[in-house]
Length: 89
Image (cartoon, rainbow, N blue to C red; front, top):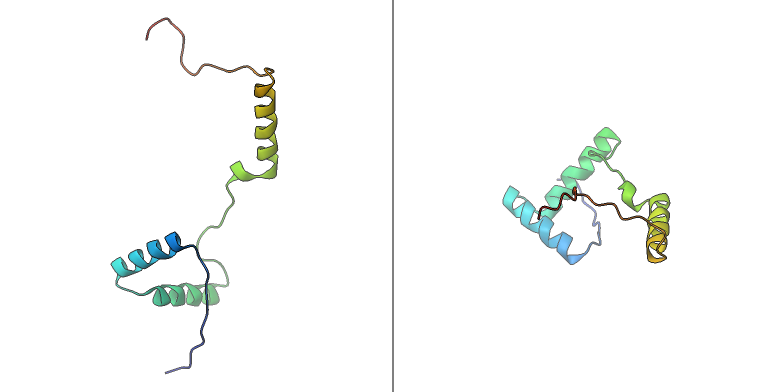
């Protein structure tokens, strides 16, 4: 058998628990899951799934939201009704 090396990975406890449960349901250990992932990355020279950033958290959008809140707090914004006001409840 080939020699192995130790790799330490830090993650929050909730993520670890969820991964352990999922791996157990799949009949494997977390070590096996990480080795599968590492082999796929090494073989394909890429992350084997899409990695993206939620645009909601972009600096531009966060600045827009801060300004909208400031405008609303200052009474300079219009609040739009989502439902038609036909008098019916």
